[in-house]
Image 1: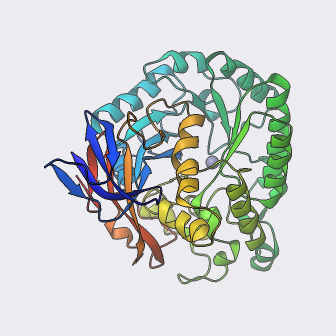
Image 2 (image 1 turned 90 degrees about the horizontal axis):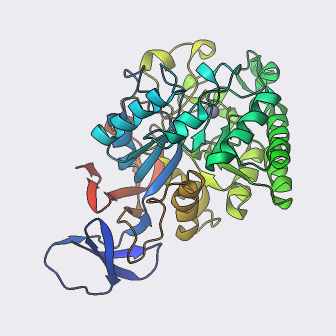
Length: 428
Ligand SMILES: [Zn+2]
């Protein structure tokens, strides 16, 4: 098959010939009959998410492997890492293999289970990291995400343990005592609203400690969903030392701010904006954008966190934390990073495909679009602007903060090893 008239990373139009799931030829005017018109869309390597909550097993009312990966494919993703905070928790070889098998059977993109760091995410005892690494799922990313590994001795031991198989600990940096009962970012707005604040230092203190621990034992640390300007400064310092530390930022932390809790198009105290870590200030957003642009923050990860209506449409203090994100990620990154001139499409490809695949140690994903590479390709039209309509999402959940907002761009097609999973914006 030949995909005609696409602009690889925004370059001049070219055709891509796909054969046996790989890119066989790239050039203008390739000969052949079986063709698909790319209509000048931008071609990116298939996106890779390091941080997705697929909810299966246990909360199939919120999302399943099937619907979550359909959502991923529609967002241009060809691989996702499925977080471990399922029920049961993915803390054994048996559970990660179950998720991996569901992925092989039902998924619209590759599914790589993340293993829990501690048994039951309880922070008391290390999970079977080695058994999960050796399992069919070949787990390389471990995280108690949703909770912080706050015990420094356990964190040290986890970092030491994963060195044996080149694994990485992805930390949800949240000092639990400093955030007990926290409802939103601690600052001017939380003071005015009388909501318990979530101080930036609760994130920054854990990141600083973990960078030091990772350096001390010579291991790999990945920091989930960085949300404050202070965290950026710590990461910049750790990287200047040459330490093996990577970090992610979510699309929503690149665009939205905590004042939406007080005043927004959908009213005050709308739990659609309740998320962990919380939305921060405009100064934090500016620091996160600059850090993603200069490489201090390595990647964008969605933290796609589906919740059913009854868990979100309730009073603020009782509502679940989290937002869906797979189907809007690329548009939000275009709005926050490309339209602002901070990143070009090559930069987007690095941060949403190449580097996340590298951190997750995925061999067949995140490859540049070159002859011989697997044909994992996302076609994206950045020229349209559309109103976000959650009822059109493939995700089982609708908890998006962007409902009714006009965002740029649209995923036109997604190819997983040459096979289309999305064509003309629709699931295949
Ligand atoms: Zn988290």
